[in-house]
Length: 105
Image (cartoon, rainbow, N blue to C red; front, side, top):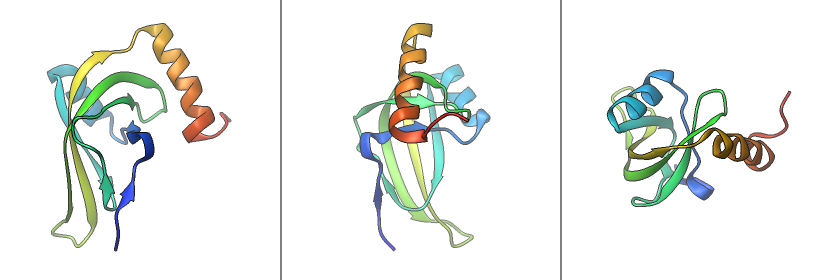
């Protein structure tokens, strides 16, 4: 058991529904497997499940726990700062592939 730190706190959504709620309501959360640390108050880039940069979000809370199924999970609550422009999204997506996601196939 231990905490994994999210370097630069890249918020990559695994669920389209979680991303939709963030963009629609301005607040949302995502659930990640394992214990992870997301620094509250930090602004980060949010990515879609398809690795596309979407928005700037602020981490409101990060709650690591063992759920009722016995799995280690971290819930990350965030608020939307703003959506990225088309140009910003293109540049951030290209940088993320180089730094985090690996080469495009």
